[in-house]
Length: 342
Image 1 (cartoon, rainbow, N blue to C red):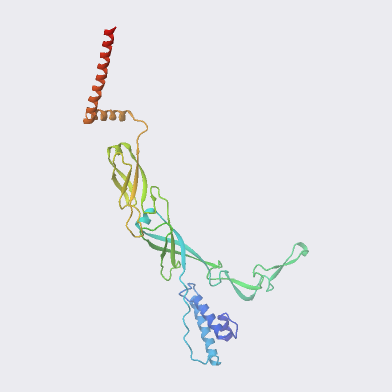
Image 2 (spheres, one colour):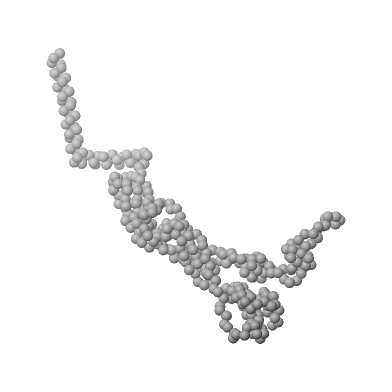
């Protein structure tokens, strides 16, 4: 390999210092190493870079510029892991109980081969302007001819060819998908970090938790979940059972006549992440029909008749009748006394 070709392979001019050669080699190895660059010609490029570097080192040793024994070069510095930050929307149930979510997305990054330009500059002249960097535009009859920058070479006079790595787009779009375990008790605004494998393009996932509003529940800071449930007024009066929603699913609850607020222990939201769940406060709203049908009226009459023989009601009815009879007797006695006086 000729010296000019070796220096050009490292992007240097002939006569560059040893420190400049080392810095250029490290920079190129970091960019083109196959473990980091997935392009099809990365292996061939890294071989040419290493061959050029070895040739230049050998010339330094032969010319006495480096009289010391050859040293093993340290590996190129490792690049920090990529961090991808995104939002993760959870239902209140998933946040409370914990779950495994499939996180998918697409990453767009600038092409390293062309530094996001989509093209490579050649040493040959631009065919559009023949290396001048400008072209002459003219109107009819060449009356108003004027020079304008060449749009093909962007005014520098050098030819360009499309970058093979990104197909001229200047960027790479990579899809990723990863299963992430969400701990029980994740709160709105929490940031969960999920490490990825070395070849995962997303790197470290920083997931910002968003808890979606719920149709039934309202979450308090103390982990207490509240919900309001309409219930049948007659069933509530009779102290029947009813189904109420909880974060773990439907649960049966016995109603009590006159009671509107109930506390269900241990079926709320965890007070702390991975901690014990709080309580669920259920407020029942007894609902009665705005008007009774004929069948309902008949049923109520039967209930009233059946309840008439109850002990307290029967006693009260006897007292009421005795009081009314006393009033009537007193009225008759007053009338007779008045008639005798007349």
